[in-house]
Image (cartoon, rainbow, N blue to C red; front, top):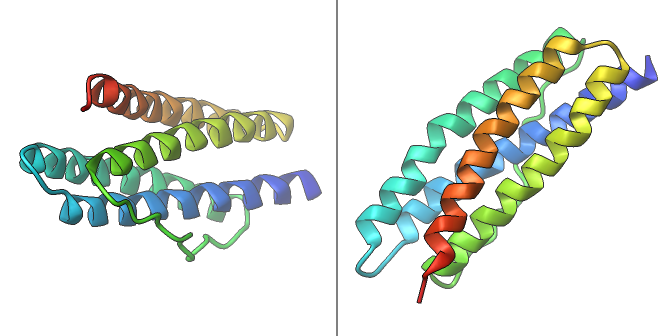
Length: 141
């Protein structure tokens, strides 16, 4: 049971991070300024539904495993400019991929193969987000 509880705790950590991403993207969409304001605002806003979908999946899995979904949100880093917002978002995506990779190992260890596969799908989504942000930052001045 302790391995299942570790998986639940890990999924709750992931859930809190998805909530944080929603708050971060909403906040950054409002904070962006300058000539690319509209494009960046749209980018940040379009990420929100994906992150909410990830949160819903994680919360449902926590409950299915016998746990209670997390309700806390870690602090969102406030950025001084648009580039820092993108850099913070990139770091968050990379951190999420790393966490999901650990979670896949935990799910597999307790025989939760469907959770493993669903987490792999989330990694694909997060990797797409990461790659998009990397490309946005490539020629940033």
